Length: 154
Image (cartoon, rainbow, N blue to C red):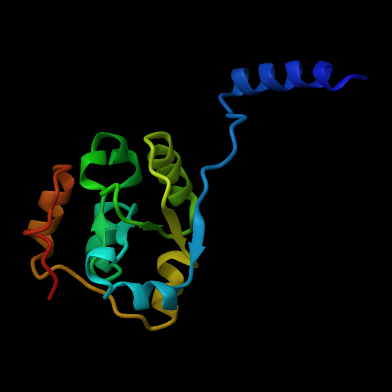
């Protein structure tokens, strides 16, 4: 059997099921310690993107992280800088993959995934930020707008 005769059925199956044949976007793993060390790099510090829900973010997040839920990312790309590394995290890694696909498809190439996501961060006793006013932060995040002022940490 020729290779070409296998590719056509695979492509048809992908179209029928909505599964992409494209490779996963290039996302480099980054350790917790490496991220912590890079957070103080001033203008070269990575942009830390929490792609979990607003509720998860308000409950506690990596210090300095910005929350844009994965399902809002496509409409909020202007909030993600193109001139810095972008470190993504969620709870399990699934939403990171979805967010990375959106970012890579929009030309972002410097994507990193925080190893272990938020559960590992918490298990290691790493610092966690929570907003000073959780209700105001939730209201701002639920509106789908940047919430920098409303989500100032304690």
